[in-house]
Length: 241
Image (cartoon, rainbow, N blue to C red):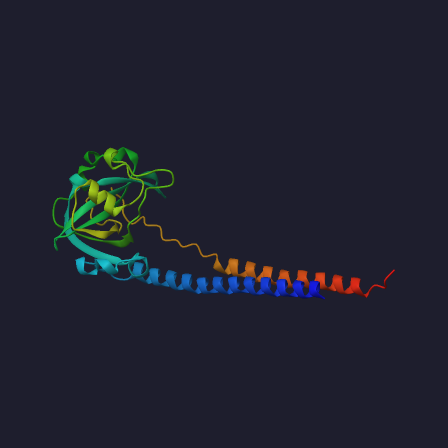
């Protein structure tokens, strides 16, 4: 009987654990759907003023990522940084340019994509705006640490991640917003390059599949335990030889 009891306890423990994992995935599914809905609302909402100094401590993924914002200032084209990019238009670079805002602080603007032949700003003089301009776009959270197996190399001006703090330090910038802005298509440019509006907004959402997998495994655990118990019960009923 102890063996049968141990089988029952193990089966029930496994069943409860697997069901709890499935329920957790359902909670994650609800969270992810809410996140997608909130981001969709932010992206398509009219632009609001980009967060100023007083709001910087509150800027994070949960309440700020993909917020549609607007900021006014003058570009520092002499301090731009090319960040390696792979886009729907192929490989090339994001043009990251500091914007000295009319409020006195600096925000990095991802003005958009350029192919390798246009990496050098001297090849696209028409796009180097000198006047005070207004930029609208999506607020993005800084990326740190470089890319997979590729670290940023500020000394060589090689950038593999959109690391606000690292780019600011390399360019000697201070009073820099802790985020960057992906410029909308046609924003902050006087020619067709850099090409803005290429932000990819996609969230993996496999939580329902994971939940069904855990619930399926829970049922399989009960089924397996039932078969083992039935076998043990029948074996015990056999007449002793």
